[in-house]
Image (cartoon, rainbow, N blue to C red; front, side, top):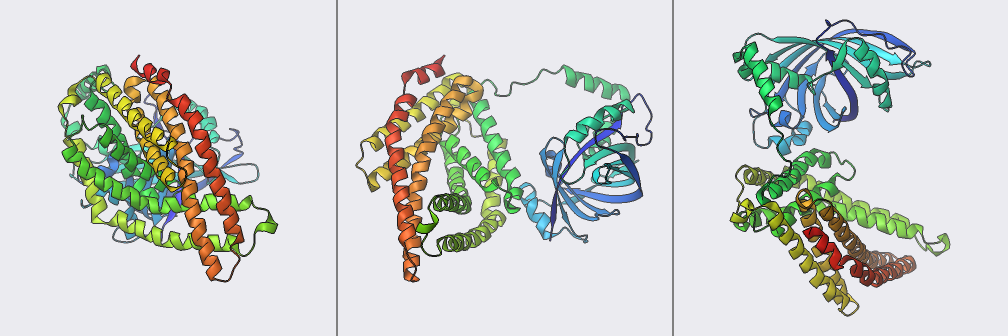
Length: 525
C-alpha cells in the first residue's frame, strides 16, 4: 500500500554574508495571519541508489526515514520546478516491492545500496490564515550528512530552510514569501535536494583539492563556452533527439505504473518517435543495430496501445452516445458500454504491468542505453546536419504524397480505409522527421511539422471512426444476443459512418494546401 502526494516546496540557505539564524517572522505576508510553533523533531534518513547513482542523476531520491509523522520509505520523483511527487510506503527493513517497481526502469538489475545518511534536527512552524487553516509549513533543518558509499571521513553540516505548501495550496504564496526570506539573509539553495548537497560536499575528489584548486576549477567552468544544443553534424542532431525520447520512456515508467493520466499515451508516443527516427535517419544510424531495437519498440508500443486505444475508443463512443436524444437510447446502452470498457481495461492493465516488469522491456532499456553509449554512426553522421536532415524530411514527405494520392483515388469502402490508414502512418513519420529537424532547419521545420500534424490528425480521426464502427457492431451483436434492442448501436454506427465520409471529403482541400511547393521551398532557405 502506498500513498502519493504532490510536494511543492522551495529550499533556502544562508546567503554567505550572514550567519544562520532562526526562522524569520512571516506574518502579514499575503494571507499569513500567524506562525504557530510545532516543535523540533529528529529525522533519521538513509538514502539508497545504485553504485553509479542512476537515481540521483535523474533527480530521483529514495530514502528510509524514521522520526516525524511520516516515517517510512519515501520515493520522490521530479515533476517541475519546486514540484515533486512523493510516494510513501510503510516502514520496513527492506524496500517495499511497490517502490522497487517504481524505480525499476532506472535501476533494472543493479543493486541498490545505502548511499548517504542524513540526520536532521527540524524546527517546524505552520503558516496559517485568519481562520487557522494551514497555508504552508516552514522549517529549519540542521543537517548532519555522512557518505556511506564510499565511506568518507568527517561528516558535513549545514542548515537548510524549507517552505512547503499545504495540500492544494497556491504556488503564488511561495513568490510572496520569498522577499521576506531574502531580506532575512536567505537565498535559494544551490542544490535541488539534501541528497544532492550531501553528495557534492562529501565527494572524495572535492576533499582532495585545496581551496585554491576548487576556486580555480569553478572559474574554469564558468569560462567554458556553452555547447550548441543541436550540434553541428547530422549525428549530433539525431542522437540528441534519440536521447530525449529514451529519457521520456524511462521517466514515464513509474507514471504508467501509478496510472497517471495520459502517461501511457505519452510513453507510447515516445516509442513511436524513436522507431520512426530510426527508420527515417537510416543513413545516420546503422540499421543493423536500430532495426532490431525498432522491432522491440514496435512491440512495446503495441502493448502500451492496448490500454490507450481502449481509453480513446471509450471516450469517443461515450461522446457519440451523449449526442443521441434520450428517447432514441433504447436499452441499457450506457451500462453495456461501461461494462464492455471495464472488462477490456482489467485485462489490459494487468498485462501492461507484467510487460513493464518483464525481462524483455528491461532488456530494451539496456539496449537503448547501449546505443547512446556507443552509437552505430554511419558516414553520413559526420556530414553537416543541414545537408542530411533536409533530404530526410523531403523524402518522408514524398512517401506521404504517394500514399495520399493513392487514397484519394481508391474506391470507397474497405480499400480506401486501408489506404487512408497507411497515409496516416506516413504523415506521422514525416511529422517526427520534421520534429527532429527543428534544431537544424529552425522555424520552417516547425511550420512543416504543423502541416504534417494536421494531415495526421484528420486521417487519425478517420481511422478512429473506422475502429469505432467495428466496436459498435460488436456491441450490437452482444446486445442482440442478450435480448436487448440494438437500435441505438445501429444509429451510432450510422453517425460514425457519416463522420468518416466527412473526413474523406475534407482531405482533398487540406492536401491541396499542405502540398504547395512553397512549404517545401521554405525548408531549403
